[in-house]
Amino acid sequence: MAQLQVDRLSIRYGQYLAVDDVSFDVREGEFVSLLGPSGCGKTTTLRCIAGLETASSGRIAIGGQRVADGSWEVPPNKRGVNMVFQSYAVWPHMTVFENVAYGLRSQRVPTAELTRRVRDTLEMVGLGAFEKRYGTELSGGQQQRLAVARAVVTSPRLLLFDEPLSNLDAGLRERMRVELTELQRRLGRTSVYVTHDQAEAMAMSDRVILMRNGRIVQQGTPRDLYETPNCRFAAEFVGNANLLPGVLDGPGRIRVGDLRLNAATPASGDADLLVCIRPENVQIAGEAGGENVFAAQVERVGYLGNSLSCEISAGGLRLRADLPAHSRMQQGASIHLRVDPANITLVPEVAEAAI
Picture 1: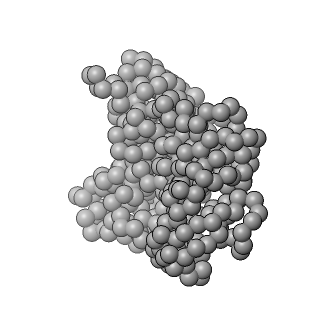
Picture 2: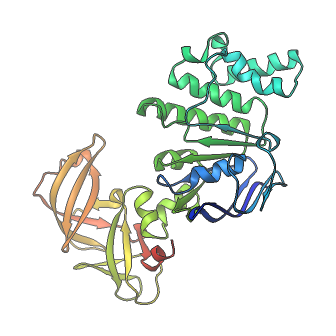
Picture 3: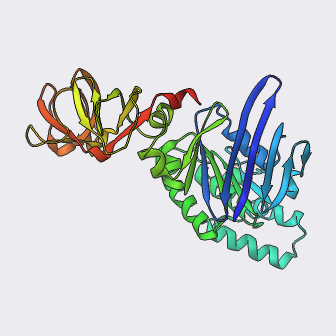
């Protein structure tokens, strides 16, 4: 059953169309990310779900209850939704305990139950020993946990996250990503998460909705978006990709520059297309000959610890290959590479025009 339904949502500010006919569902207990560059409409969509923005048209339902339908809106505090903001919005004049208790007090929860629920929630997010501290006495990671605790303690129908990890340093952001995902799985709360970080969306989400220019470009599991992008933008935004102009050269056969490659992905017609090859799928071949094996020259080598990021020239083209660090590849080396036909994705150029 869909816990959240967004149907043909549009949001306009004067002549500017920030969100353009967006539709998607989020199932109960699902973790869905809205992913895209700045200005794509993802945060505006999230704020409209929360009731902090007014829809110009379209319909939103939460738990089967309509909360927005044209000019009719349910107030934010009546929607059963809680939101974790990018700034955390921790109240500095309140203790950790009072920050978390605020929503329960507004619901007039009895004191004994309120105390139990606040302390249980603080223990769950690892802040049980900090209940008497003030918000300004917490680190960035602790404030993020506090903001999550305040959001979940009232048992909302829907949790909304607006880039809550973007203010943390890289190491802490990765740790909090794991903690937040585990917490959501444990609680089973339906969650919508906004981010511009594709690694964050891929690691945390059951499903990703990729947006651009106020519209949905593609949606699916992280594997769907990574392995079968439907256009140039999707291929480039989600992970690294070699996007090479290609032409069909027979059934399952593609001409890319001076190379002839086999692809497992079916394609029809004779329209120009893009050949998407992920750098990690370019492999060193032991010898010449064999399917999709081609000669190449190493133009540049960058050491990344667990791999070598190499710029390769082959068949009149330049492409990136992420090769094993133990291969000890050197600039100027002549090698043979191979790409498995199953790792070649064909992206029609016409899909880009529809975005």
